Length: 216
Image 1: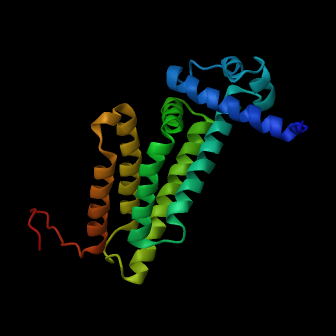
Image 2: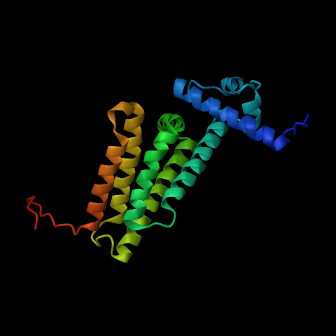
Image 3: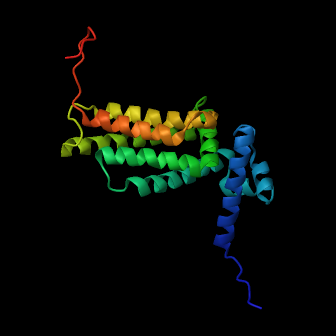
């Protein structure tokens, strides 16, 4: 019989971490972050009550690591779609990345949104990191639009910073609505419509609207 290779310590640690984070996602979806304890996470993952605490130090430390792992997973996914694209192509690629991520990582997204929204009611490191990530997302979208303006693909009178805010509002707002009532949204149709509208808004020469409401 072939000899079974024993896992290394690093492999065992990675496996236990993965199982604990998977357990945390299940518990957060079911109970929220406030109703989830490190003891329960360890037990559901099949380990001792104190493993999560001994490894991450505190509940906030554990949740920060869950946040960090989600961020890596999302950025890798996004980069696979956007790559070196710029302008309208980058905006559309990023939207498609979110559409597919919703389908592939729905439980992870649901758990993270619960974590994020529950962090808004108090000052915390998670809230600070979330604010920083939002700044990064807006900066990315701003950069895509500015590069499109520089190449002449996007109209020069488009406000890159303002479009970035609107783009992020669509992205995060769509996730929120989908998590609340997935059956109410046809994701494919929604994103196709957004792609057409975004391309039209970015590429066209905007008309000047006077205070009276009459366009010139």
